[in-house]
Image 1 (cartoon, rainbow, N blue to C red):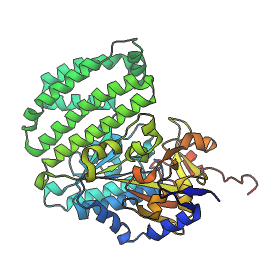
Image 2 (image 1 turned 90 degrees about the vertical axis):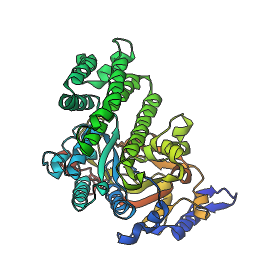
Image 3 (image 1 turned 135 degrees about the vertical axis):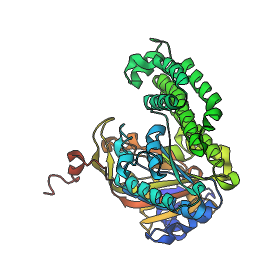
Image 4 (image 1 turned 135 degrees about the horizontal axis):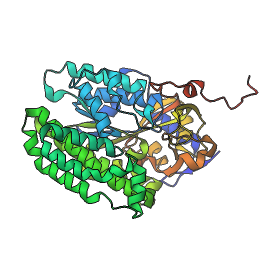
Length: 458
């Protein structure tokens, strides 16, 4: 049996470490009290960042929603910020707050048209935003309403449209200037990669100065626009300002994406961190006491502290690290893991959603170690000192499935080295998980993946 060395220098078998974990973990029994220890750990923290080990696992979405509902009702959290584009998420925000055109819950998710649609257009998200709408409808104090925001920067053209639509309503002359500036992108037919390639390799003049000029003008005029019609006008001015920031950062992102993964990854996560900070400042003005609280939903790779992974050694940072560095103990990082099951994912970028079988975790991984614990589903708080936490400080493999899953290249495609207690404050392990259900269940997804024994199992 594999042997591990903990920080105290003593030798322990994997089974004894699993036993130590079993003694201090908190079993998940799908009961109301499951996350009491986590809420105690949260205390009065302002940011709880809740990850996922894949973008297509039902239990990660449903358990994250369970935790979030308690943070909202018991801890006064007023926003959920997710790994999604700002204008797409704003349609959901308007629905849950009862603002706008009377769209239904499912219609509020129509903005999520970009691959992978199942990431937000799924049954678990639909249930959660329905709960948010119901919660908000019962709040007599508007400052207790919960909002829904996107943190990502892929929506260059969607954000341009949102800025223009806003300015058409509040300042037509400013809208003309914005159209002139954003006209720099017209030759690329909303093909962001074509723009990035052309500008990145000097085949065309970049739009960098134009988008900065537009952002600066909108920032300068925002206080004036915000006074037009009370709180709603203040919100709308903020949304427009953030869309202009998305355009500015997305332009840089697509222009630099051909320079390599490092620069584009860091730019994207820096944008998410900047958006979270701006969002917190905006919400502080809305809540009593001026101290808002936000839950963040994103992949483990964005929310676990990059300094505790191979990413940090490569010079990458992420949202979890940047939030910890800025807010310290006011930020709590929560990760998820699973051993096996099924997942909704594609085989190639832009491909159809498939229900794929998740192979059992590789030997030497955290997931395999957690599979050895007698309790199949549990939460382990990684703060403090005990034998289990110290034993976990030896670097091990950790699995990450994004929107693509390629089990035939499992080790290269989906595993990296990490030191779990430095990466997260809490880890939630669910041993056997199943695929999240897309709202559009295609034949490809329904068919699923044959078992390993196919065709001999027929």
